[in-house]
Image (cartoon, rainbow, N blue to C red; front, side, top):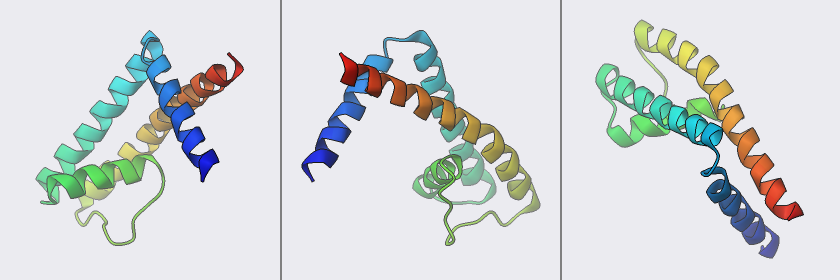
Amino acid sequence: MKSLGLGLVRLFLGFVHGLRDPEFQAISFLLIVAILTGAVFYHSVEGWSWLDSAYFSVVSLTTVGDATRAPTTGLSKVFTMVFSVSGIALMLAFLSRLGSYRDRRRQD
């Protein structure tokens, strides 16, 4: 359990360090915009609550998936396909940069 806590602290410190990098800031901003865009879309088209809409956006971008919630309209299904394909690349860029900052902090 101690190593989990230490890993989370290192991840947090890597995130704080990354916020000083303009490229990391841009990726973080785009990721937030993507999540908000998905939340607004699902709230408007599917009629889900704001929390469910944001949750589904994050779950889609992290490739976790959720068997209890799925788009029901054709428009939502097409949006989800485009949203996931483009957003997963953005999430991977974010996690890759975050990991590099965490590792860099470890070497210091």
